Amino acid sequence: MTASLEQLRRCHFAVDLGAARTRVYVKGAGLVVDQPSVAAVNTRTGALIAVGEFAEKMTGRTPDYIRVARPVSGGTVVDIDMAQRMLRQLLGDKVRRTLRRKPVLRAAACTPHDADPLAQRATIETLVGLGARRVELVDTLIAAAVGCGLPVEQPEATMIMVCGAAATQLAVLSLGSVVNAVRIPVGGEAIDHAIVQHLRLRHELTLPSQSVRPLQLALSGNGLTPHGPASTEIHGLDVATGLARSVQVDTAAVRDAIQTPLTAVVDGIGKVLRDCPPDLVADLADRGIMMVGGSALLPGFDQMLRHATGMPVAIAERPDVCAALGVGAMLEGRLEPISLDPVGD
Ligand SMILES: Nc1ncnc2c1ncn2[C@@H]1O[C@H](COP(=O)(O)OP(=O)(O)OP(=O)(O)O)[C@@H](O)[C@H]1O
Image (cartoon, rainbow, N blue to C red; front, side, top):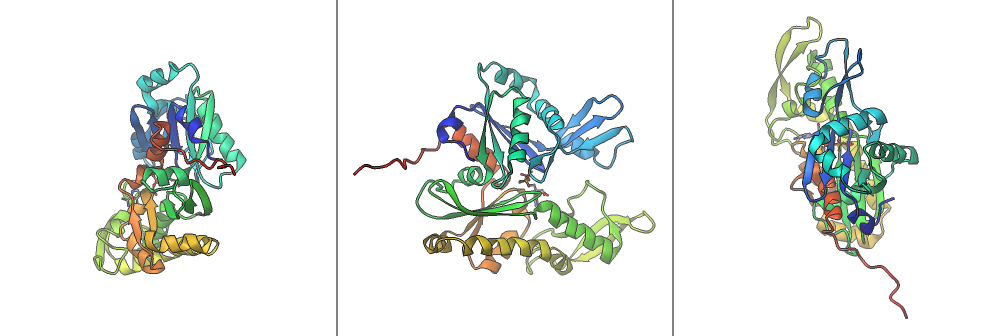
């Protein structure tokens, strides 16, 4: 599915439409958009009121006539029209004018490794609606690996773990291709959800829908590991009375609450390694796993994986924007193509 480096070099901009955030890389200008994938619409007039950070702030605080929409769900564009309007607004007039000047506008887009043809079509249509005459698709796993500087083009194994909002994708790469990959439908959202449920059931506390990142609150410091704080104070609303209340939450209990989603991720690592050729697995014992994606920032997640797998685990320098920077590097021609042409007899 991944386009060739030659095709990507001819693209003018690249888009990574994620369930949580949208990133746009414009050739020659760098990362110009990194905003939540959210749009707010006036349902009476159909007009777009806000996009990105501001629209996200509106979530849960809107009157009847304003709808806050998320056009991307589970890594797939579910509302093409809304995604186009959101992207147009996020790009702004200046960037759009620059792109419009290209005689044949070419775009690249990151797509999950296992995206089905319908999901791929939806991404392509979204960008065609923005004026792109050709759209190249790039596997998010490869883009992220390039973005964090892994030597993907070498004949040695590298393991990348893209920890997104809706899903975690894991792959072993070698010679510029995916050798084996899995997609686990567990990401930052599932972990947040597990904590919200825990607070509701154990402490009868609800958290305002979007104002706080429940995870950050509950796991302040290094809460995912036993070395973190023993308890942490959380502010929320009492389930029964609706009044504001604060509780001391035991971090060990929170750790247990998120064990189920995190176990699925550990199982995924085992699954990828089991189906890999032994030589590549041997490479990985030294090289380990590289974590990218926003959820890689979950405090202590890397230590937990290190403990569970016994492998070295590292977090990329800018984990959240790796995929966008990786596809950007391909657009700028910073990646040398590997030659796998027949060498002759
Ligand atoms: N510092 C942090 N600590 C914990 N979680 C974080 C942090 N920063 C971001 N996240 C989580 O990372 C997720 C967003 O990651 P990212 O931007 O990679 O997602 P995405 O690319 O939009 O998602 P997907 O790849 O699933 O479509 C959110 O669930 C968010 O809660």
